[in-house]
Image 1 (tube, rainbow, N blue to C red):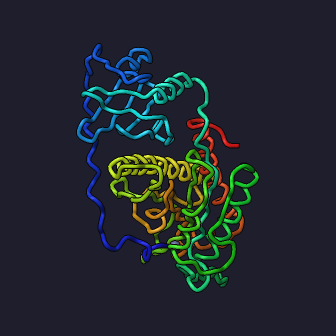
Image 2 (cartoon, rainbow, N blue to C red):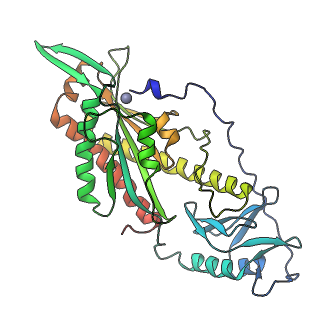
Image 3 (cartoon, protein in one colour):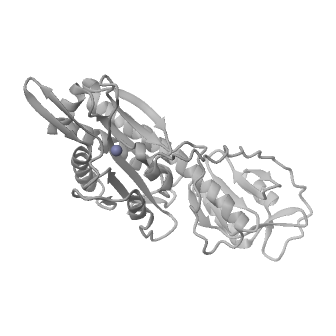
Length: 357
Ligand SMILES: [Zn+2]
């Protein structure tokens, strides 16, 4: 349970303005090219691709039904197929015309010709599991007496057991991915420390991705409440500082890349949440109840600079659920559900984006 971790300030950024993408036709034939550079319009003809261009923000994309290169004029970085940030070479405006540097032309041709193959990267290089609470913070806890037997439920213990089983399953399935835990024993961690463990992971290159899964158990004043649910960050919440400052010259471009990254993490977080919920549904079946996907700006999901979700395994305040959550066999079922969900997400991420090493 995570009430303490909610964003109590209510300071949501205003909903991101939907980009008004204006397609412009740039007159061909006036390509007064710098040596080696080409007019983007000529490249479009060759690739049978289209251009969307937003003149006010100076961002655009070159796309067909399968590939997309989203760029900011003047930057040599671009986002490929919504997810991979790459240095592709500069696309810039000259005399009102959009031009691609020689390097950008080569990169874009390679991206559009590679569409039938798996594009290398990004790959998921780490999965961070975050068993909530620990040490002096027990999380939520509740006792029940059923037929003379006492059931003492402590959130920090339940979530550590499930996360530990989950870690083992994931390690076996994905030996090439680091499967990390924010804690492996009964210790206290600040919320900041949890996200810092994930955010400070060094990636070898820009094409590596990390996902973050926080695991909790729920409580309610209503003893009838039971079931599991998966939370993700509301899409209108704007995460900041997702893009490192180094190497990106203009603040404006950094802002655009940050927005793209935020959008990408939002999409991936929702996909991950859905995949985990489906996995749990499959493993738990009628034993408990699927309460669906929820949105909330929990501290850990809004501060993790990666796709991130928070899972609530069940309510310790419901007697039947408390009995289940005391049963190692049921905790294993929950772990397998989480595992199936995470594994399916990783598999589809690989299919979509490339391979893991
Ligand atoms: Zn909790």
